[in-house]
Image 1 (tube, rainbow, N blue to C red):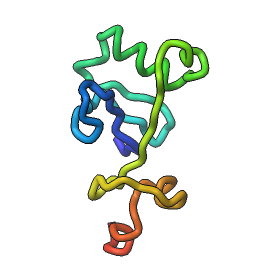
Image 2 (image 1 turned 180 degrees about the vertical axis):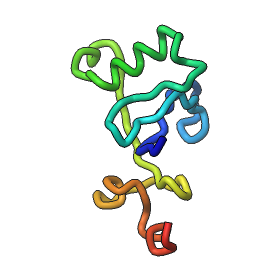
Image 3 (image 1 turned 60 degrees about the vertical axis):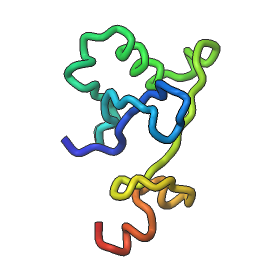
Image 4 (image 1 turned 90 degrees about the vertical axis):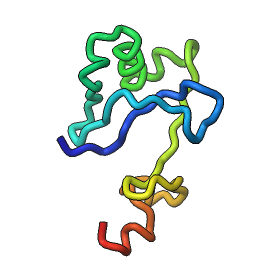
Length: 94
């Protein structure tokens, strides 16, 4: 399945490496949980909160970062964030 983004949940103090991935945001705009999390009520709730964040703003904090799909570097340029790939990786033909 082609994907736009991996979805991860910060589970520790290191905001560079303490993420647990639990699914993907597909090209269809839908959240697809990993098979091992599909029956887990917590991850179902997280997916619902991502789809409808306004319903949960009083319960959780949301933050999003954008990283290059090839090298995983932080993306800062609007065009790079939208495409999901940084300029250096784009030039290399990814």
